[in-house]
Image (cartoon, rainbow, N blue to C red):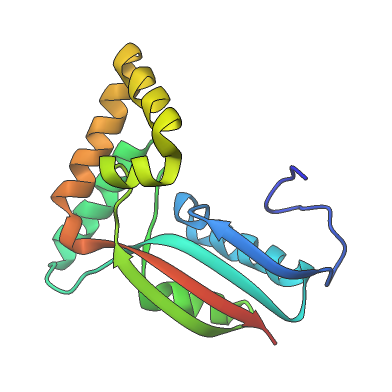
Length: 166
């Protein structure tokens, strides 16, 4: 089924599990809440909602550096990416009626060649590389995004959260 994440067209309380992969990060905070509310609506009581998102680590960042990092991520991603800290992700889920069951953080390895190869397989990895070699604008965009990820590597990670509708 292909549907708008805000209006899935599914009836209330039909799903046992809903999973979102890096979709919330790409939206403004009010849209994040709307998407989480839609997941909540279609889940049965006790159903599980899993998200895998980009998370900010602001341990050693000044407020100014934090703001600059978020602005740079939004600019180079071309989708106005707006990641949150792990506690902010948890609060957002809880505000929409979920109980957080587990949280796992790991290094953010998006656009790292080894990770891409492992996730995409050899054939798809070669197709991606070929496309980047033959499409200079896309290559420029991907390299700018990778450069930003590298620049802020210690302040970015991946977060996986499993929450339950109660």
